[in-house]
Every structure is written in C-alpha cells, then in structure tokens.
Image (cartoon, rainbow, N blue to C red; front, side, top):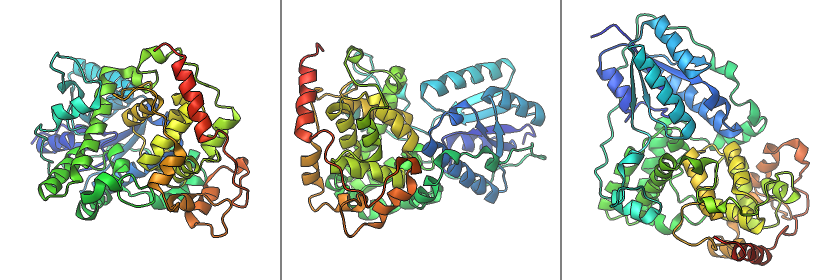
Length: 472
C-alpha cells in the first residue's frame, strides 16, 4: 500500500457505485482525497442547474463521510487548485470522470498535459456514457448524423456491467483544508423558487436507484405509449439523476435489458431513449458547434428573431402565450425544475416556428431553469425542434399545440394541474407557480387567461411560408 495520495476530482459523477475512476483509486491502495472545485464551469451554470448541483455535492459529501472519507471544497481555476492540492498533500495522481462539452474538453486536456509534464499521474475514466463518442463509426468511417442508424449500430453492443461500490475509501493521514460549501451560495439565483422546487427533487444515488426500481417494476411495460401522456407519472424521471451522475447509464441499461427479457415490451423504447442521450454526446463530440451554433450551417441566414426583449418572448417565458399546452409545460418547469418530454417538443416548436424566434433564446432559458440540464441533450433537443439540427424528417414539421393537447391531454388534466387563471377550483401546483416566479412579473392566479399571442393555425402558416421562401 502506497502512502502517496490520489486526488479524486468529482464533477458530474456524484455517486459511489459504478464509478470507474473512484474504484480505480480505491483499488490502488493509496489514500484517496475526494475534491470538488468551483471553477468557471460552475459559476457559468444557470440558476437551477447550479442550485441542483450544489444539493448533489452536499449529498455526496455525506455519502463519503458515511464511508469514513471527506469531500474537500476548493474554488478557483481548476488547474491551479489541483496543483496547490498536490503541493499540500504530496499527491502523485489525479483521477476524474470524463466530460464531453467543448469547454470541459479544453480544460481537461490542458490539465492532463500539464500535470503529466510535472510527473503527476493524470487519468480520466469513462462512466458518464455507455459508449465513448468516438467509438461509433459509419461503414465509411465517419460519424453518425441520424439517430436510427446510430441506434442500429450500438444496440447490440456489450455494455459494461456496473461496478460495485467500494467497501472502503482509504483516507490520508491528514486532510487538507476545505472551504465551506454554504459560503459558495450556489442557490442564490434561485431566490424564492428554491423552496418551491425542492420538494420535487429526488436527491442522490439511493433516490435514483429507487426511481429506477419503481419504474422497472410498474411503469416500463407500458412506457412506449405512456411516456406521451404528460398528466400521468409514466416516465422514469431519471434525467435529473443522470445529468449529475447520481446514477450511471450502465445501471439503467442493464435494468432495461432485464425488463425486456422479462417480456416488458416498453423497455425497448426506454433503451432507445438512453441511446438518444448517447447520440447527443456523439454529435457534440464530433461537431462541438451544436452547443451554440446552427448544426446545419445553411441555417445561419434564416431570419429568426433574436431579440429576447420582445413581448411574445416574455409571454412564452411566463407561460402566458394563450396556448394551453405551451403555458402548462412552461409552468411545470418553473415549479418542478423539469418538463415532460412531450411538453418540451411543443414549447420548443412554438417558440421557434410559431413565434419565429431563434432556438438559442429557448436554449438559454432552459439552461437557467432545468434541474436536469444537460449540455448535449439540451442543445440537440432545441436544434431538432428548430429544424437546424440532426433530423431525418424535413424541417417543415410544425407541431400544432392544440391538436397535440387533444391527443395527449384529452381531459385537460395536465392543463388543469398547471394553469390557475380562469378556474374556480385552482390546483395547488398551479398556485405554486405564482409563489415561485419573480415578483416583478406582477402575475396573479386571479388574472384572466390571455388570448393566443399567435394562433396555432396562423403560426404554422407563417412558419411554412418562411421556410418555403428560403433556399436550403
């Protein structure tokens, strides 16, 4: 057993089970010093993702303490923080789990190269994805640009079995100093919204495993159709935990495969959704521009509105468009920190096509409001909805939010749950929205419900006219 410590740098891998980097550090026999770093990538997070990350980090600290370990909190430039910790502790190695967004790739590559030049063993491990993005290739050696061929290429791959939780995490003889997590004030931008959203959070890997188990036991069999009904709890709700690594995709995949083997037909759709997440990372790796530029470059000249100050953009953000499906979904996000996937498609299509607004406006709003924010999935989802992203279906898909509501919320249960105006019997969730929003919005549940700012049929015609007059 070596007395030279290993620094285990946690980022978006807030769990102890099925954690390749942590297991490698523990298996080495060296003392392990877990650390989280508040650097620019943390400070740049939106209000809800930053707050939720802070909750996850706090929970991880307790999980480590239960193992006789300790989580060290440091802030500053990540490379400088790690170098200082190495100097203080005599550590000979730094381990971490890979991230794939362009900012993280640039930072981590610089850190790894610099530490290696200083004879520090710097290692990155998988675990955030089932398949490394560079390992899936077309027959001609390129990357996949359409989901269905990507699914076919990876669906029969062997996915690594989940790793066990370390029995013990070797501690150093002395711990380095730590900052106080409370002093970071990671939830400050949430203001009064934190109190409203908090009951909807399912925090930590134990809660994530319970979610997975309950889903596989009672909901996955009918997931194929049930996932489209926003008023019913028929999805896994695991996006929140996957985004922060409180559960691994490997654990979810193997549970889905077992369910499929048991004859639960909806499990195949669940597996496809896991691979959809992988596809988003595949695209982000090969075309990093997807996070902030049009994936299809010929859309650069499309005349989207980019002015976020316009009245219709404000109405969209506030859930006051007069289109019930759109407004209900936007309010669900503000109260719970998440949004049903059918709702995400509807609100994105309405903003980009009915209102002719740039997808970046919506992406930035989701960046600020989602507790299940994920850089790859959010970017690809918005570009898919806008028409500028990867999609085998032509750009002229325009969801009709009225007929979509008739199809997926026939009895208006979803609408009733989230919209209070104009109703004598106001749901508690609908009222919670008014407790969460900024007071400056000056909204009340007793207000009248607005007329549509752009009617469904009118917006569709306008969007199709704009597309037909462009040279794609």
